[in-house]
Amino acid sequence: MRHPAVAVLVAFGVLPLAACSGASADPPPAAGVDLKAFDAAATPGNGLWLLSGAAVADEVVAAAHAAGSVHYTGTFTELTLGTPDTEPAPGRTLAVDFTGRPGEAIARISAGDVAFEAVLVDGRTYVRGNAAYAAHTGLVEVEQGFVCSIGEETFLAEWAPLLRPANLVAALLESSESLTVTPPAGEEPTVSVTVGASDGPVGSMAVQRSGPPLPVTFTAGDGTGDGNFAFTAWGEPVDVSAPIDPAVDCAS
Image (cartoon, rainbow, N blue to C red; front, side):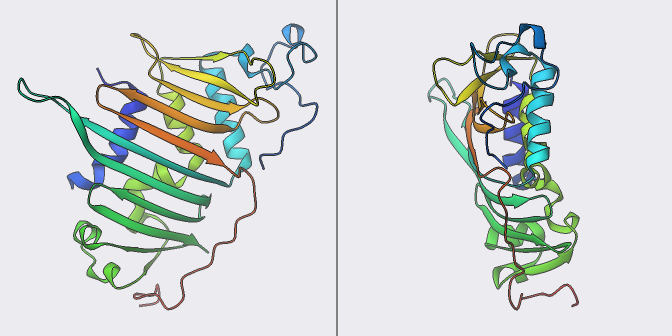
């Protein structure tokens, strides 16, 4: 059985081919933490490890929503099924590089042969891509330069979770059958959220130990493939500008 967190990653890669991070010096515990059991002096940090299950996901997703902007990169590689004569082998790879916040971002995404760049700013979406992306969208102009549309739905609906970081974090965590947090050791700056399933853990998300429990890395893998994500610059200002002289303007 494919674990839901891994299935989320697979879905991102397959769909198109088939058709403020500052930590407080003395941070409060996360919402929902039992203050009577929380000893910040003995184990400094935000106390996320005192929670479990849906409460962990709620806190991490809420922190991502509140931060707004982020730079994240990620890859997921499918593992093709083996045969009696062959071993399982790496298949298609999804890769994403995102900087910004929902509606104000620059994203570069590839999935198999498809590759494109998207700029979201001022309520408009600009995309350009390779021949495979042009064939997928039916827009030959994207090979010549950016094509503009109003909103995000025209070109990017199938990629939406990758363009909204908090939604991506939610998909990775909230699909799990169980979440547990390992208490921090020593002066480690992160704590580990184990993404579990009925037959054992398949992934892990490192989140900030102090201040908001923002994601730092995420890894997951099972018999269908494996993925890795890295998150930085949570909450930092972003500066996104519309491309100059797009091949197809929104007014066209």
